[in-house]
Length: 206
Image (cartoon, rainbow, N blue to C red; front, side, top):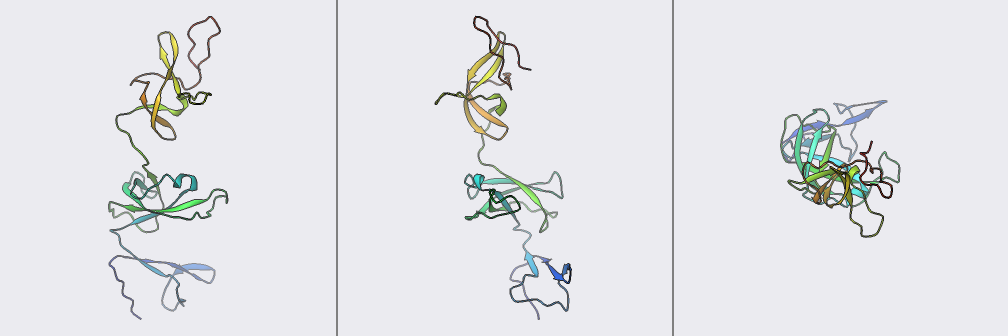
């Protein structure tokens, strides 16, 4: 029997169970109806199948830019974008209470080192801000009162001075500060010791 592919591409043979082992399909094997034993991959249109936490999935949108890193080639970074987002969560190897949403990223650049079934990781750019002053999240404190603005402690000649800030884009390690800080300001990562009544200034945190 002759099978003709409707597209040009790279032939990827799938593994079949042969006794207690898995091996590529070969002459004499029995293939059942609907059983996948070969794929033809268009190397000019590669995609990455990935999963994201169901909590993070609501932040994703079709077309968002992403960066894909191939585990087999450290240092190789390829541009991509979100191509599709699944509608139903799936259960993976994680506990059942941590469901994931399948997504598909389409690579925007070809590379001969990229082959089917390689493992990869990806970062999706949710938001960006240029020429921003960054502050570590550990240096940003939240007020206990409703509506209170976040603040930082800035080092000055008199000690640590409390300064309210307006925050912009943030990641899991830092936040962009729209106002309240200047480039070069030194901020405290821990709450400075508060002076006793009648005393001024404070000592640097350990």
